[in-house]
Structure formats: structure tokens, C-alpha cells
Length: 194
Image (cartoon, rainbow, N blue to C red; front, side, top):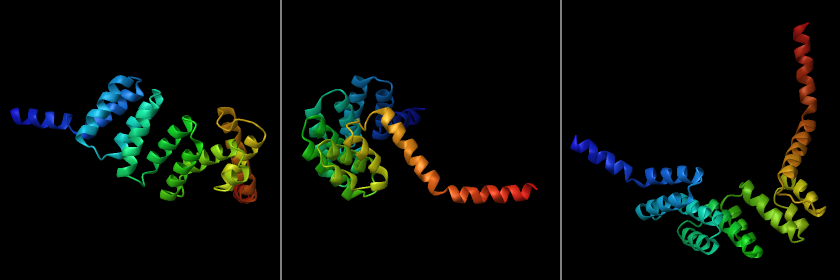
């Protein structure tokens, strides 16, 4: 009985369990408790980039930008190729009005993972917002071109209605590209039904 209690206490004090508890508290909107649990998990696993990233995200949401910035800087030193850290750090820098530094962070995220769509989108949005429309269109032309068009017209590309319209337009473009294949499938099906 005593041995199983000790195992349970060890399990409850593991960084993974504490981190998962912090995530749950964070999702429930209990930010104070979540922050305490993130810090407790970090004390047990100081090199875990996910814990540092989520703590910094929480600090950012709570408006504590300088603390979030320090948290990201410490985490990036230990994990320079973890793209989520670079994205979050870029967002914090942008919120502080330091857009050129933010764009550098998005570029670093892209060098770590060239397929990171979030980094492409954020970098393009910030570049286009600052008048660099051609450079903003460059990373993924097929995906970002609609955002460039909206930004050139003065429409906010981060607006949810704009994003839905962009998604519909991209879907329609893809659907028309493959319309002929769909037509062939329909013809084949109709011959089998006869």
C-alpha cells in the first residue's frame, strides 16, 4: 500500500503531468493557476521547449510582454530550431511595434522549417502591412497571393470574414483545376449505372 502511494505521488509530481494540468487550467481560463503549474513544470524540466512556449504564450495573452520576451529569449537560446518559439517571439516583438525584428524571427522559423505555413502567413501579413507587397507575396505565391490582394486594397487579412473568403477562393481555384477529372469520374459512374 505504501509503495503504490509513493508511485502515485511520483507520478503526480512528474513534469508531464504538471504540464498537462497547466494546459487544462489554461484552456479553462484559469490563468493564475496555469501560470503556477507551468512554472512548477519548468522547475522540474527546465529544458522543455513546449513548457516554455506555452508559458510565454500565457504571459503574452495576459499582456506581460517583457516577461514573455525574456521567456522566449531564454528558450530560443536552448532550442534555436524550434519554430513555435520563433513564431511566438515574433508575435511579441510585433505587438511591441518591433516589426523588422518580428519578421527576422519569422524568417528564422522558416529556416528551421521551410514548410511552416504560419510563419509564411505571418511574415507576409507583416511585410504587406508595411508596404512590401512583392516581398510579401514571394514565400508561397499560391497561398499568400489572396492575402496580398486584400492588403493592397486596404482590407485586413486577419479578419475572420476575409480569411473565410480567402479559404473559399483557394478551394474554388483548386476545384476548377481538377474539374475535368471530376467530370471524367461522373461519366464513368454514369456508364456503370446504365
